[in-house]
Every structure is written in structure tokens, then in C-alpha cells.
Length: 329
Image (tube, rainbow, N blue to C red; front, side):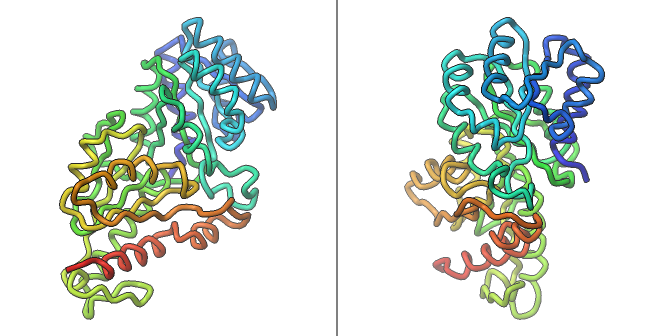
């Protein structure tokens, strides 16, 4: 397994070999953001701004206005913390900068909420001309990078620190704004993004295995009645870019009684808000629920944090089972 920040670093060098307008603007984090290999191969296309994200945003915007495609890399928490500069310099000028925010979510662990990228989606979603991208595996990272290298619009690329398994089958093709169904099921649809996608798939596997067992019980002691007796098979959807296509979401949700959004982000302002605007406007809307981070986050081992916020496979499994237990027959 490999993290999406590692796949980003590898893909960045490859696309730079093909596109000489690709440059990197760095904020003294080349090793952590995986832009160091780019610096070593293309030193004349690597611009070091030091611990000065606000200045780096201006530099990147200027490069974009001159025809370059700058990838500006820093921790997501630090980079989007300079939101005024992003708004004024990138957004208003429609400057074609790719803002690369690494260390998304809780996985930074013991460094705690002062370095966790937990509010970045909420900020970037407010900018009407900035698209948000978050790959779920290496296959998707490569395809996103190819898309971003040839596009000219401003973008925010959100990357994980934790290693992730491959979740896409051969033949997958990334399409901006189009959610991808990884598992087709019934009763409940689980929408996830980035690092929560493989965890949602693991939870779906647990539900299918335990739901079909005698007694219809799942881990956590929740009995879910008839749906469990025949096995619970949630639909699992990867939402890898925003804004999301409304018609596609409506088609996916149709026929499901429950919708659960799982995101490694604050409960307010992220993927749940994006999807909620669509789902809650449906004439025959399903119950809509969210698993996310309701506070500022905590410091600790990543596995403990994901368990605390029920963003691990066990927590998602129990939450889906509880949703179906409450569902009307």
C-alpha cells in the first residue's frame, strides 16, 4: 500500500517530463509533500519560498498568469490557512494554480489539530471557480495528475499521509465531478472520499459477511432483523472531486432508504454539505446521516483517533447497521 502523497510525488515527476510548463512552488516541506524528487530532476522549475505560504500563493499565481502550471505544495492545514491570499490572488484572478494540500484528516496523529487538514474542504468549496480533487488510490492519483497538468483552471488537490490499498478495477477512468460506484448494493448508500473510501469498502465487506450469519447480527451486538438475515450489502461510492454532478448523485441515491456520508473532515462544510444540498432536495428523500469530526480533533496515534471518531471499519459497520435498524419497513 502507498499513500496518495507518495503517488503524487511519483506522478509529478512523470508529467513534468512530458509537460515543460509544469513547475513546483514549495514551502520548506519538499520531503513531507513528496516534491523533493521533482526538485532533484528539475531544479530550474522548482521555486522554494520557505515557511511563507502567503508569499508562495502570490508567486504561484504570477507563474500561472505567465502560462505555467504551478503545483504549490504544503500541508493542507497551513496552505488553506492563508485563505485570504487564495481568495484574492488565485480565486479572483482565476489563476491556474494547483494548490496541493497534504496530510489531510486525522492521520497526522500525534501532531494534533494544529497541523491536521480538517477544515480545508469547507474553505475551498466556497470559491466558485476552484475545483477540489481527492484521489482514493494510486490509479486515481495518476489520472488526476494527468488531468490537472493539462487543465488551466484553479484547483485544490487533497492528499493523504496514510498508505491506501488500490480500490479501482482495471479500466477505471477518472471523470471530474462524477462519483464512481465501487460496490453496488441496496438499502443504504455510503459516500466517501480519499482515505475513507477503502475503509468504507472494508465496512461493507464486514456487513455482508456478518449480516448473512445466523441470527442476523453484526459486530457491536446490533441486530438488524430481516435485512441482516439476507446480508447487508451497502452501495459504496467514491466521490473524488467537487463540485459533484447532481444528476449522477440522484441516480445513485434512487432506491436507497438511507444515505451515509463518511469523511475525514469537519462535520460542517465538507462532502456532507455538498451532497446534502442534493439529497435533501429530493421529493422522496432518504434519511441523511454523517460520520465526520465534530470537534477540533485530538492528538494521538492515528488508529486511536479513527476509532474515537468512528471513522474506522468497525465504527462505520456499526453505524450502517444502526441506520438500517431504524429504517421503516
